Length: 402
Image (cartoon, rainbow, N blue to C red; front, side):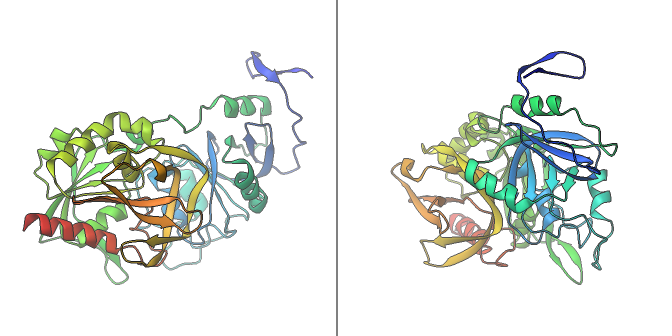
């Protein structure tokens, strides 16, 4: 078999796999690191991106998903076939600049049909340099990820239908993967800012906090805006600090509580600089609440371990049991790493577990106002099953101040 050649003639490392024949009309391709090529029709930006392919089982909220900073380094295969049917707007975003690598869809993006839509999803993708691949058998791709794990891949959209498959394949092979990768710095803010926007209502849109009762410092590892809104709605003025903030910088704001946000990448890699900060905050005794990556790094800070999952949890239908109340809540999740439940040290209690696979989904420190969860209580799959966690955090702040 001949050796692959790049566009400039340089020889690639290994012999070429047997690439499938490009079907007529194909304007986009997903090239996996094992040589598998999935053809389809392109949408969004004409660009090539490399990352990990994961799937999300949500049937709503595609704009929030695509703008969740936790998806940095990943391209999202939506299992729900009708993505784009309600268009895009300026309100349903979790960050201004999406960090996801692209989208993989079953059906073509249709004209929007919703009174809140201000643009077509295809135009929105173009505006944010996000490529999409449509016309894909997403069920087959999902089964592949389920059985073999999340693959590294390249998604390329070219309206001319011209693709250098050997080069794309080599890009997928050369990408190092998410394990060991710190991505929080890429999606974090670069300087501190204050947040006072509160929850959205149908009649009035987003509100603003006018009478703050508490001051919370949120460390931004890739924070979602609705987390900030949930805190502000409960009377918290929020000061957001970059991911690289030190304990001294956090405590210099004299917060009533500290929030550790969600974010992308390997918690062990981000924890190299975040864990010392968290340990310093814990020593202060200030109430602390972590979500997703923040939960994982809190666990690392107290001596537990994290590990990469086979395919991760991503969707809005994940049942979680809260052991402290005995209740089951339907949650939104997006994570590819998890805290090893067998590694929890003394003084740390498991509080939540996934009813899908038994993985650890929440912890608290005994005798201290500190807790965290693996999922996203600011999202609305239940629709408000998990909002009590923000109230739990505020109650700890009230008790601490008293």
